[in-house]
Length: 181
Image (cartoon, rainbow, N blue to C red; front, side, top):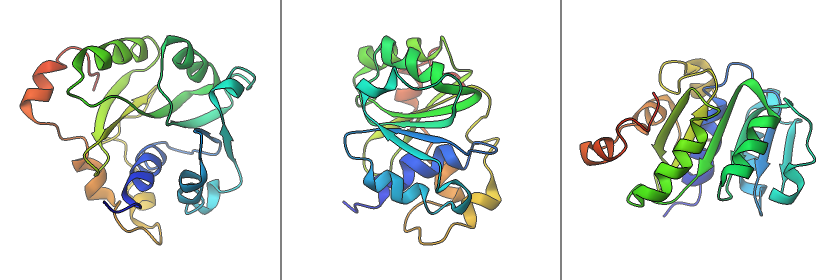
């Protein structure tokens, strides 16, 4: 598997959906690849904050436009992420395989307490992440100019962005009423 696909999809999907992302929080044990992808957005490269789950509770309220989380999200973690996100903030979070329906239903029900839009998307690696947004829709509000003007991308583009949200019918049926789009 190409190692550039995962970080490009985790980063550029939320950053190319958010209107003016300035402050980006990365919750990860190893944020280097994700930070390097964010730096491809010149206007955002100085406001990247990597942190661990333990440090999340010490962050200021409403201070981040986008949170990229590679850690499992229980109700307490999601509540802290919601607290640090701005009112139009977005979260890209890894999760169990979509075949793990019960675990994902629990996560999506917790996310539904805070976000208007909750949509799984394909990371291009066989795995999926969830984009949870308080305001913007990832296919209707994509910033086309930003998504197609980035240099040094190997996988991500505006067509991949939109296509990554397509799900087969058996997935749609399992998550009917839970996915908010």
